[in-house]
Figure 1 (cartoon, rainbow, N blue to C red):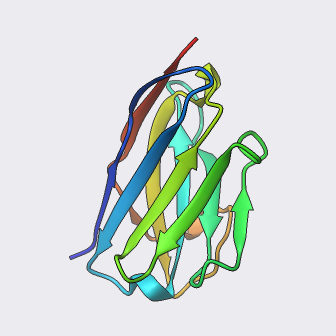
Figure 2: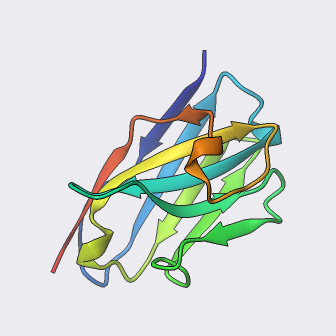
Length: 124
């Protein structure tokens, strides 16, 4: 059974940092592209970051590029999102997602496995 469990969300002040982690199980993590997406109340889901199998391919959304950094540990089956210089507009539920045997992509429709999400709230 596939599990993607996000952790690390919470409350941060503007300019601060948070680190999200996603623990994966039940599928071939080392051959899966992994991504982070977010959704704020009343808004559409937004692409945040994605990373390929070996970590060599990485894409970021325009709104987080240069502030957020994605990484993965294939030995631990985890993917992380380091979020720096947080802004109030980063407030959202953050979701971890996977494409088993797939390539890194910004297209949410291609992700086959999703976590339940973790709330990130940034105060001004």
